[in-house]
Each structure stands twice: as structure tokens, then as C-alpha cells.
Amino acid sequence: MNYQMIHYEISKSIATITLDYAPTLNALDMNMSLELEDALHQAEADPAVKVVVLAGAGRAFSGGGDIRFMKAHCDEPDFAKKSMGPLAGKLSEIVLYMKKMSKIIICAVSGACAGGAANLAFACDFIYAADNAKFLQAFVGIGLCPDTGGVYFLPRMIGSHRAFDMFVTGRIVTAQEAYDIGLLKEVTTKEDLMPIVYSFAEKLTKGPTLAYRNMKKLMFESMYKGFEEYMKAESVYLGQCSSSEDFKEGITAFLEKRPAEFKGK
Image (cartoon, rainbow, N blue to C red):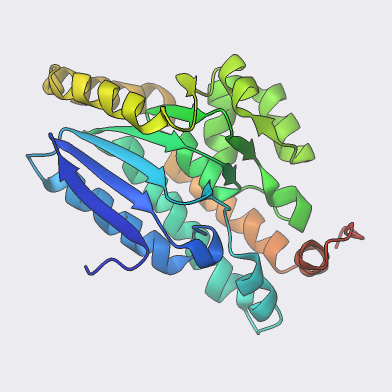
């Protein structure tokens, strides 16, 4: 695949996948998702790759969904079924694949990491963040429930009450708070983020990759085996939300920079 929205590089047995599409703040649209999926499969299949690093270029890891695209197309017939549903399904397939991969995935987050992008980061095996990073489950602000496996992964990482607070409020979680509640391995300066990530990645490349692979398999068996069944429920409830009047009001209010007036339908 000829990548237009990501970069894929290999050095010292480390494959680096960088989200890089500044016009949408690295939004996870279908094109970006398909390129990411291809790069992950490429890294998994390459025996020269022992560790994968996932990062974002520019001023954010990713802003999540492309709100302007949603606004432009939300009035089309079957938008939820033909656009939102397939995209959410693809992102869920990607995070499931990440959990099944034999290679360890390290996420490096700088700047905003919102919505589905935050849940993409949470699907990685380790997360490092610059001190300017901010995580938010932004779905509630546009009348959606979380996608990309967020309601499955996040409670398993930080507990149900903390996770539900993030889902319901959509509030910003700073890098320091994310570290304090157990989401991150380390907080660094923006300048030190990638050098520290690569130092850890290089250390892992010299470790027992067979043992790492089996650890990931056991983690999947113990923590994530029910995810495929969960994906079906996520699809149903996200479809209900993305075909609602609240969703249309939410994205309109977001773009108009005003409080949304939700009506629960």
C-alpha cells in the first residue's frame, strides 16, 4: 500500500508507525484507518521487526474523529449504517488485532489524544506521554457513546468508576493524572519523548521475544477474550447514537463553538 496519511519506518528492529495528516489533526477516518491496519499487519508479518512504536506527527497524536466530515454527511440516508458503522467497526478490528499481535506496541503521545484515538492508544501495550499530552473521551460532547473498544479497555485499566467518569464528563485528563491513575508508563518532556521511547524499545528488542509473545497471548486470554462479543454490542449502541438528533446537534454545536442543546433523542 502506498501510504498517504501515515509513515512507516524500520530501524534497529523497531517499526515506527506515525499518523501524519495535519489538515484533520491526524483524524481517524477510514483512509487513515486502512493505512494503519495495513502497517500493523506489515509489522507483524516482518521477522525483522521485534517492537512497534505508534506516534502522531504535528501538534497532536490525533483529534479522534473528523467532525467536519461528520457534519457534511450526517444528513445523508443511512449515514450511521454506511459511514459511522463501518469506520467504528474497522477501528474495533484494529484494536482487537493489536491485542492479538505477537509484537509489543509502544504508544508515544504528544498533544491531544481524543475520542477513538485515545482508545487506540489504550490498546497499546505501553503508553509514554509528553507533559503536554491530554486524553479525553470526547464522544459525549457530540452525543455519542465511545467506540474503538473504549468501554471495554478503559475500565480494565483504571477501574469502572474512573472510566465511567471519563466517559460521562468527557473531561480532559492531563498526562500527569493519566500517569497517576495507571494509564501511562512514563511522562516526559516533549523533547525527550521519542528518545526515551526508543531507548525502551531497543531494550525490548534484545529481550526474549518468544516469552514476550506468550505473555501477550496469556494477557489476551485473561483480559480481552470477550472483546469480539463486546464489539457487536458497541456497534448496536453506537449506531443508535450516530443516527440520533442529539448527534447532529452535538457536531453542529461543536463546529459553532457553542453549548449543545441535547434532547435525548
